[in-house]
Every structure is written in structure tokens, then in C-alpha cells.
Amino acid sequence: MADPVYLARRYADPADQEIAGFCAAGLAFGQVASVLSSVEALLSVMGPSPAAFVRQFDPRRSHRAIRTLRHRWISGSDLVALLVVLRYMVDTAGSIERFFLSGYRPEAEDIGSALDHFCTRARGVDLRRVYPAAATRQGVWYFFPKPSDGSGCKRLNLYLRWMVRRDHIDLGIWSRVDRSKLVVPLDTHVIRVGQCLKLTSYRSPGWPMAREITETLRRLDPDDPVKYDFSLCHLGMQGACGFNRPQGDQQCPLRGVCVPHVDTPRRSRQS
Image 1 (cartoon, one colour):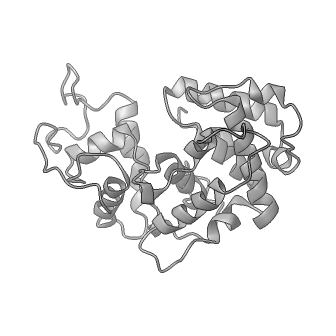
Image 2 (image 1 turned 135 degrees about the vertical axis):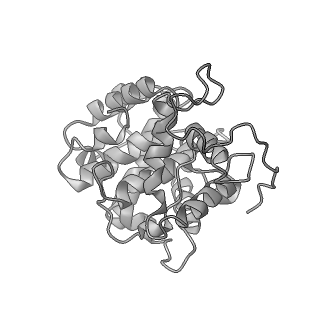
């Protein structure tokens, strides 16, 4: 299975799944093989219980095995910083879920405001033991993008999908976040298929596009709009989408339905 969620499924304890899932989703960018290799390397260092590793993590130790890791522009120091942030969440709230719930409001339109609160608090963790005092931007912030900054928050939305939904793919170990509030993880494949199927009229990726695609899918299933994400994404990952490919749409299960060459109106990214 190419989806990195299977790496979190290796663990029987939900606490381990929660931590392993965050690491897997956080590194889910780039080529699939590279993603899986990087996540495997990090989880290997964390041992049989990622949750226990995080609870005992001390950045004052050398952690040489982590500091030598790298995934594209994410350095070993960034991974150390991530583990510091995850320990802070567990120490202060008991779990990542409870930390997230401090900003979650069931009456909100979606999880956008909760993500903003979650990432703002995560970015506020003291990381002076990890980064030089002169550092103006901490690489760990890449794991905590904010909807209010316009980010589509693809990896965080992917993580929330894994944690909240339950089926043969998603783990469903969080119980207090409504799956109807989730927002689709906005990756290259979802953007392409979303535009071809007229799920969005936005041309630039970001939170407004992710929200609009989700709102369109909500018309099909108001209670679980993000259930379509895996199919939309893997249509492109498996090479079935004919967009800009020699075979055109001959192999695409959506042939005759999508309109890849019709230009859609350009809209503002303001939410």
C-alpha cells in the first residue's frame, strides 16, 4: 500500500498510532518512495512505542540518529523540534487529540479555526534548545501551517482524516471531532481532479480552494464529505488521470465527465 497511513497501522496502541500518524502525515510530501523511506527511518529510531519515545524525549541529549535524518528541506534539527512540540502537547493535554480539542468548536463551519488555534499554540513552544538564538524562522513551522495564512494545510488535513474517519483506510481513533467538519487534503492530484470535475472555481491552491472542494463534496454526503479524498487522490497517484498525458482520458474512469481543457474563472484567495 502506497499511502503512509499503513505505517501507523503497524501499532496496536492508539497512542502510538496518533504519534506515528502525525510523523507520517507531516513528512507526506515529495515522491511516495522518499516519503515512506523517511517515515520508516524516523519511526525506526523511535522504537516499538512512538508514544513512549515522545513522552521521554529530551532535546538536551544528542539524538544523533535523528539529527542525521533529512527529508527534502526538513532537517534532523527540525525533526528534533517536532518531537519537542509533540511532547509538549502530550505533557500539557495528555494527547494530540486533547491538545487539538482546546480550539475545536462543534458549532464552527469546519475545522479551520481549530487548526489555526492548534498551529498557533504549537508554534509558541519554546525551541531555544533546538535552534540557534539568531534563527528568525524555525523549520518545524512547516509542520504547522495555518489556514489564516492561506495554506491549504494538506498534511494536517490528511492527518485529521486518518484520526477522525474510520474505515479500511482511516484509523478513526479520535472520537470528539465531527467528520462532517473535516476539510479535504489539497494535494496536486486533488487539485487537478477537482478542477477537471468543476469541484472548485479557484485557480490557486490554498485554504479557500480546499474549503470549496469540500463544500462541493458535502452536497454528495453532508456527514462525511472527505470520504471521497482517497479516491480523488489515488486516481492521479496510480496514473489513471489522463491530464497532459499521451493516452488522454482513455484509461481514466472519469472519461467523458471531466473537462480538463475548460478554463475556469480566476478567483481571489481571500477567505
